[in-house]
Length: 550
Image 1 (spheres, rainbow, N blue to C red):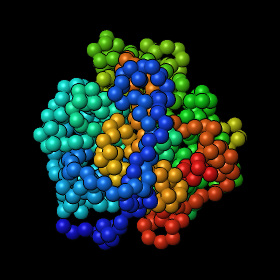
Image 2: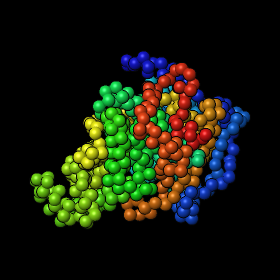
Image 3: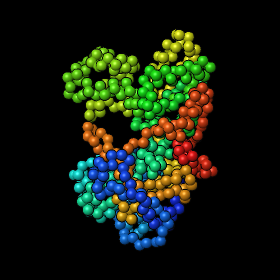
Image 4: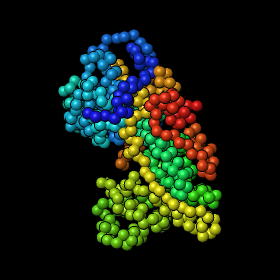
């Protein structure tokens, strides 16, 4: 197989480990834990895995461990470093006993249910170390939620004599991992379940999980691209670049990218929700900055927009909810709407059946965006918010607002736009040194937890702003991160998503500097990810982590 020069060089990289994982490991139990909320309900649902202690690792005496087999699943969207988690698991279980084996279930959780797997050997793994992607075994979005799935999975786990299953995924996947751990513990099935925190969105984090893996690499990729665009904007001096960034539920990606590049405008969904900002207010804010720069002869700039912004704008959220009800599949209004062949007539019909407030919002939208709200629907009949071109919606509305301002004599500049959406570009990038090290440490940590007989835990590696040998490895009970939330009309136990904290140091830094960055051209150009060179360039964590731990 032909590989690039970078792949060849990266294959030789040996990820760094915390000092506690370099030799024999001793587990130290901390205090018993409880869930972050709804303690009585969570305890009742997880009687076998609730209240377990936090676990930290220390250097210990060598011990003999019988050979054991482990299964691994990659769940959900890709994130840089997943291959190194698997590498860490493999090396960790082999160090405990060379006779141990690792099996990968193909295509995500569905591979467990459908009994599709491959044995991961040293030779098989070799070409995947320090590479991006999930192509070693593939991923999938099948949810492990039903007992029939658990039982079907148990059949293949028993057949392969697998002692433990590691599920590498985000908050939903790790919630399912915890449910699975509880189920197997209740049945005394003899199968442990361990989770690993993955998501480029950065919304799986708390006191014990300082960051999810892949976030560091993905945002560094996006920040390089944003920096390149800023350089172009500052060179051509004739375009405003509206850049939508992945992250539907939380704005961590947009915030971190802003801290790395210092653009003129950064919208944060959580701030919009907290201030109950209307679409009009957001447009006025953006148009004000653009006009001020334009009046100074600077007809260019960069605006960062989170993917899920429209769901945080109160009137848009209400409009989407109304549309979901009114145009529900099989309803009379849906049939009537579909009878219109002319889009304008269809939009007029929709405006006529909405409440007065929602109709006003709907009619203010550009025609193309209004059509996306009514035509692009998921299998459940709901608006597919992720398909809404929020960057174009704002661009067109800002353009109209500037036209009004120019007519009133408040704007003398020119406004031209370029639109971008950065998402898939960062999900499978070759991991940064930080993610290569962090992911390998997470995998190795998972192997130690398995060897010690733990189940219902998530691998935890903390103190991440320090050099890697000072990182603190251990395990956190997944039930500790849970609360009860309404999902599909029912209250369910789930890991609480971590949104951007408006009183947190990273957002406060943005808030303190955004006015200066808006008026001035204060761009930073982080450049591409560096793998060799000074530590402060190659091993640096995210700005978010640095500010949180300062």
